[in-house]
Image 1 (cartoon, rainbow, N blue to C red):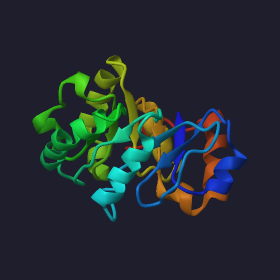
Image 2 (image 1 turned 180 degrees about the vertical axis):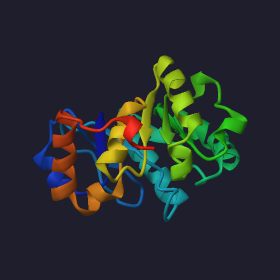
Image 3 (image 1 turned 90 degrees about the vertical axis):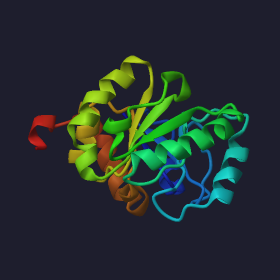
Image 4 (image 1 turned 135 degrees about the vertical axis):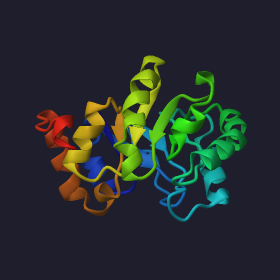
Length: 202
């Protein structure tokens, strides 16, 4: 499990090289790659979406090797997200970047695109969707295809354990950026000795 941090550069540098730490680039934060730290890129659709800044980030990433770049999405709406995915897919792929499909509420009604169209899935949506049966059903199937799985808005050890239990490869949460000196070491220490079970979450 890797914790992807947006911002908090000073603290991330302190733990650079840690096997459970990574960077999450976002168009709004303007943060950038840190040496010896794996990284992925989000689209910031959850707040203050800017197409101009997103394209600028894509251009900066061209020729580099992020774990994935999340295609723009509409929070809580899988159908609208699918439309955006079809629009942005060629723009991201033409830059030779790996693409993450963001899963949203209603995904079970439309399914996933052909597996060759995405390299990772990003579990978005509200808490009911994230913790629901569809996510727990689809993630093993996605993993069997060799795709990476990321979960957003993970801001507690309980949610971190849940993400681990369902097979996520990485997570992010605003708490890690807002309170880096508390959240980051606490989560890294927890990953050494997880204590909760998925069965305690419901």
